[in-house]
Length: 339
Image 1 (cartoon, rainbow, N blue to C red):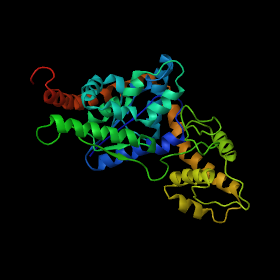
Image 2: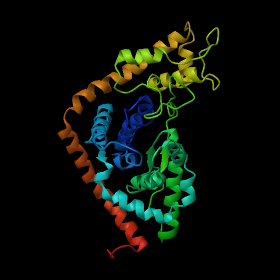
Image 3: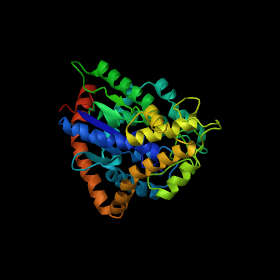
Image 4: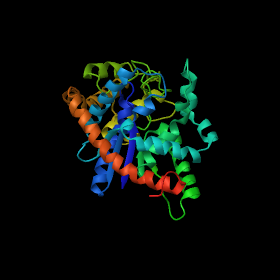
């Protein structure tokens, strides 16, 4: 088994990032190790430059993200952790895969439509081409599985189409590129804004009070959850119901923290006096889960030299793997000298 996933070094990472992606990474590292496989995780700084950004902040956020991933449980001795821009094989593969990527597929991507709507000055070609680079990120490592949040489902389907189209056109026997499967958590895949449960908790678009950041202090977490939107039912009804979006979001968070289903979380609160008890239970669970991550992050973040060494060592490992795939792709496409 080989697992790959990437995370952008933009903004402050929040509870949705943790439950939907980062915690999956740690689980993937464990599962891959148990099966004699390999887990590969990439901080995708090249994806981050497809929208307006500050160069100095990008470097800082890259170290922030590396420290957070390690604090959350990724072990550079048990997985490959690297920075995307340190592996040029991925960017070359991106260009090669562009020859089997349909313009119409890219034009239908929800993420491009959403992000391009908020760009005030420039809608970059990189933003449009984002899914091809994302496909190259994964396909370079011939991965079987990609742990992602629900919002990345369409991108994984496009990635699979690219791999299948490449194999059909260039692989005479068998397949050169592995068609990966996505792995989306059953609980906690889409955490919503606490103040606007119709909108996803987001690094860039969510409200400050509606977002729990991974480095928030316990008192801040309590305050935000105490102010979380529920509904006006009287008496209060604690149930996982699509018509009760605020309450359901809180139950989804509680369930994800405790590794149970939302209905089981609701059942545990059968004797609750009201939504205040629900919010208190969610606060306790989130604080218990995030406190060790925050404390470990504070120990790691100050040593940028050590973080840089980890990323560069991971890039060396990644390049060795990606180079094999790239050589076969170039050969199949008739690009470059015969090897």
